[in-house]
Length: 49
Image (tube, rainbow, N blue to C red; front, side, top):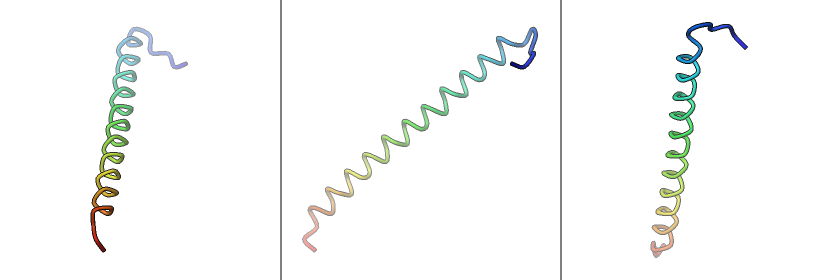
């Protein structure tokens, strides 16, 4: 691994926070996509065409 010396805790903490943000945004996007798909399917089902 890289030699961060005295900055190791700060660098690893920053990496951890960045990963949490990335995975949080990914999860949020998947939830919104699922919700939008469900709403679209319901709207298409209710459409008489």
